[in-house]
Amino acid sequence: MLDEKDLMEIAAQLRMPEGENGLSMGNSMHEKNIAMTRHAVGKLNLQKGQTILELGHGNGGHVKSILDIAPGLKYVGLEVSNEMKKQASQMNRMYLPHGNADFKLYNGLEIPFNEKTFDHVLTVNTLYFWEKPYQLLEEIYKVLKPGGKLSICFADESFMKTLPFTKYGFELYNLERFGKLVGKTEFNIVESSKNKDIVKSKAGDEVLRIYHTIILEK
Image (cartoon, helix red, strand yellow):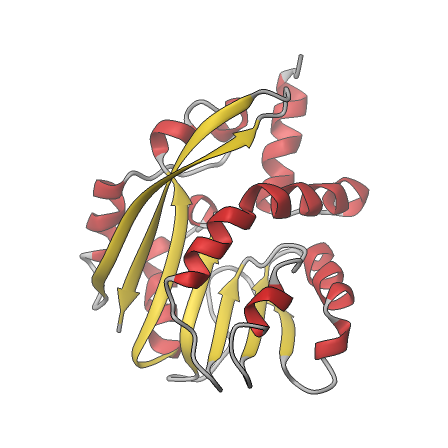
């Protein structure tokens, strides 16, 4: 049985994995997020030579599968966690010398790239931790090329509320709330899908997760 201290530690590690516990959290997040990540990536219909930016890449265990989709793809990952940046760089070290992949730190507020740099942007299960969501969406819009897409994937508020650690620093979203946020920006929602999968809880039980994959276009 997890006490409040345990729950707070889980929440903190999910926000920013650090130290020895951060390494195990990175592996756990990869396993739990991979279905959502594949769904979000698939919606982008990546083409030869495109450049993709991911916010919150975790341990980077999925990067190879992205680069294998089409020839000449270039991937850039941004993380707030130095532990995850190091782990992803190590796991994908074969791609670094040739510039196929690169991993950088950022502050979660400002994207350190010029305007119109990326064909697409991807982020999975990070929305809950955005300190200034409108500002970050504006930053994403800035670095996208005209016609570029953001694929954003997040678990629905109804599911997230069943997880006891989300009361510590998580902002929860349903489709309506996210739509209102996007409505304040210049993005257009071009596709939205509601999906379900089965994941294991910390107690080892199998639970039904409801999540959204939404495609925004510049």
